[in-house]
Image 1 (cartoon, rainbow, N blue to C red):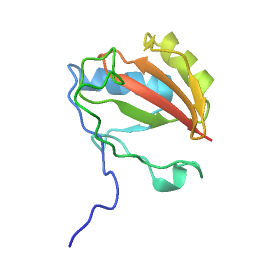
Image 2: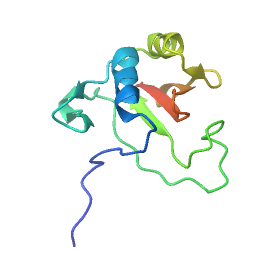
Image 3: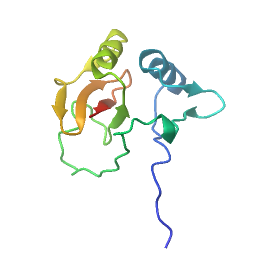
Image 4: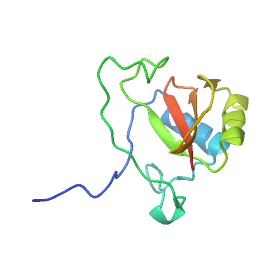
Length: 123
C-alpha cells in the first residue's frame, strides 16, 4: 500500500497572491522564490524539536476564530516575540495572548487576507 511521507505544501486562495507573498517575505522572512509558486522549506532548516502536524479539527471548533476560514496555518519561527512584533508592525492583527506549553511557545495573528496564522517556537 502506498503511504503519505509528509506534507508537500500548503496551497490557498488569496485575492492578491503576489502582494500577500511579498507581505510574508517582508514581515516573516518567508523565502519567496519566483521560480516556484511561493516558498520552499527544506527539512534540514527545521529546528531539532520541530515537526509538521496534519490534524483535522471538529467542524464547530472555535480554534481558528476570529477568521471565518476552515483552515489555519502554523509556521515555525526562531523567535516568537520578535515575529509577533514584526507582523503587527506590518499591519497584522494579533489574536489572543502568546502561550507556552511542553511543545514550545505559540502566538497567533490575522494576516492581511484574513487568514489566522499560528506561530510556533518549538521547545
